[in-house]
Length: 80
Length: 251
Length: 122
Image 1 (cartoon, rainbow over the protein chains, first blue to last red):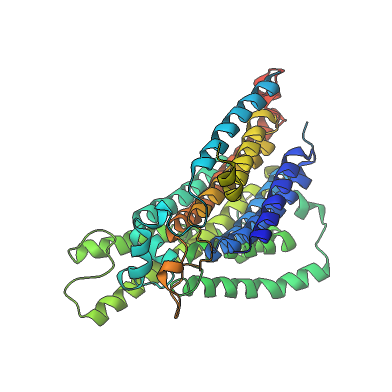
Image 2 (cartoon, rainbow over the protein chains, first blue to last red):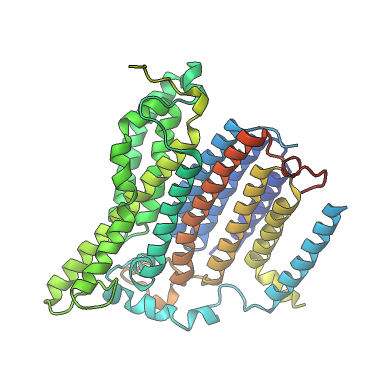
């Protein structure tokens, strides 16, 4: 396990999580959430969990993001 | 004001949790408490006891089979809840406002996806079938199948994908995972052992291992295809819009 | 506080911070979709915590192969539990988001304060 890469991924994770919470445009927040899931998938491979990486890449970055985008498309885009 | 109270409470929780982190054993140490109890047994005997060299598949299907069966039921219940809230699409009538507006994905996108989707599904089937020996299995492959069908729907629109995957094809597949699990479980009872036992008594070693292999494969395929179709159905139910539906011709 | 230990357990620390960030979004943000995003961040933080517990420093993935000793593999139990957890997380998200769509059809807004008829931040 590469501790430098681990640290870098953790910082990316925190940065994307803060962005998801701060961004007012919900569509942009959903896209950043997809990036968050992708960083998480890379972190799973670093933690020796290839099964979780496969699932997270398909579910987190794929299915969940699409469900969020469908909901935003059918409701409102701006957070107030 | 209430925001300040929430932030204060969060800081309090955070200090307590960070203090607890300071008391935990160092991460990555091979002598930590979680690695001395039952994990060594799973790792050393998982292959002959559970019949899968991927220990995660062994834990999911064999050692913690009840847990996984309940979890499969949870996904099925989630589909039931979404369908109860939003209703299923009506065959041939349901549209989204994107389909109605006449805006189509460009030729480049559609051609790429037409070539890509079969390859993705092929990869997913590979992952499902090789879940016993390499990383992968039912849940992973199911998620990939669901994602590929969602990709197809986003490029070609709801009417096209509901024509390719009609309701009469999806409804039996959605419950396939629960049924496969229950069938495998009751096979053990028929042979006179416990529910969800894979090794049948009174058979030769070769026959017992073959039956175990077939049962695990049936459950993996069930979880994979049912999971993928359930994600697809949830997405179809969420994307259809009532005001965009065509009216059926009056008789 | 044992600061040496905290500096060594950075994965646990970041999962605590992610949990608090998610809890902040769930408690303070008025928008329901934003609350669900916060819920997802909380879920992934717990997943990160559990898988980090099972980590072995120079370990291998828990797949039995030639020439890899079982003693050098990471703990498979948290990974198996979290694998089902990820799929349950997306199921709960789907149910919550379909409720959001129905709420928007009924009330015309996704702002929790407006739906409750209060002016507060909730």
